[in-house]
Length: 571
Image (cartoon, rainbow, N blue to C red; front, side):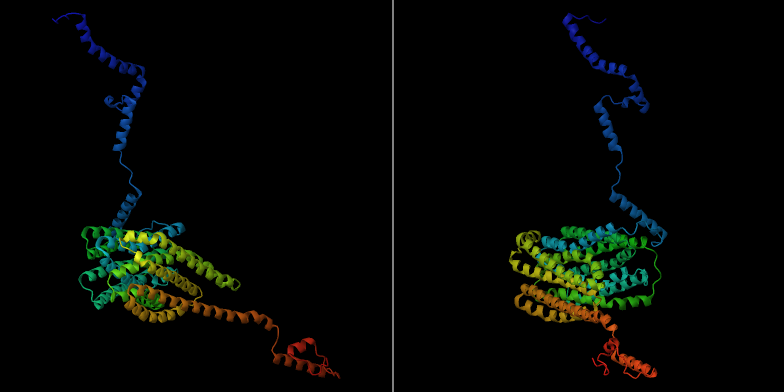
């Protein structure tokens, strides 16, 4: 038997927990009774009644948990990579890359412009950015060695390209098969490597410099090899794919090179890694992409391959000669000055190169209109005015860049490289002047090409090459780095004057050829004197047969045609 409470207060204390429990459960019971229909619907959706939410906060929590359990949709890059891997593995399993179905459309003008600009920009910025990374991580001396190796590799890349890209993309009728272009490029790339190794042997490179040079040469060789496959994409009007390939390779090279150099602090190892990642991007992206997205090529013809070497040699010679003139001060410095001067020279050249790139973006879209203006004799004065305007724009851009460098440019360069460029302020302005002259040279070469007289430029390059052999040598030996910069400006000015004189000569030749055409219609109505005399004799014979006793009547027309008055004319 339960013990009875001693008093009422003890009974109230015992009943308080029970009363509190009833107070907590009563609202839940009332809510269940007020909304049985909603509870029934929730039960139908979820057979387990214990999982039903009891409040708004519980419902939000359940939704958050369900969202957390739901798998995320892959990003665009992830989907693209997975799709490409599946496509590549499928083609390898079928043992045929060129038999795969094309998936990307041609004729995308906006994409072509954007992606090609992106590809060229990333490719052009690899050298400046890598020199900054090398300077910050391993010092100015090794940065100069890397700069010289990169300059030499870029020059050798012209041998690998052999001036075929423009010829290839304009071969719309495909007189040469893509297999012909491939064999041609593999041969030129092999020649590039052989010449590069021979150059290192002649220069006496050993150990560290040899490893740096070979790594950079192999990377540039891959660049040259990929160019023919990217040219194939452009040939079938898929330039945007070529731009993507070039941009991806350049970005991958920059990232891997920087990471390897950061970890190992060994420049030679980083250069070899750069070549390896470039080869990997070629094998897994550029090469299969060109075969996937272009029609299957005809078989190779060695006769056509030889014809390619013959047809493209003049353009290759002109490009190689100009690049050799442009880089001659750097090669002269190698035998006289320390390697850190190579870095200073190239760092000062990068702002000058911006002038060349900027004016290229301005005038290259105008080339078609310039060609149309030249084709119309009535618009050739406008053609001349376009040339004057373009040269004025080059001067204006040069002055703007000089103003930028005078204010924030040189301090910014000092910050990026971690070096003091204030000591080179005067040389910077001289180099900018040389950059403006170089931009004018590039523009005038394009103008002469529009006039279809580009073969004459090779002779001018040979003359300028002779000056480039002794002018930089004399100045570098006397004054060092300032002599290299001043010598570069002098040589470029010589080439500019020669090009201007060549253009004036070509233009005057065309003007003389046009002058007889303008006077020819006026002389066409007037016969030669012999014809006039024969006509006059015929008239006299006709009058004699008619028995005329008077002298022949000579018309004004006959006198004019003869060029002198008739003897029987008494006027």
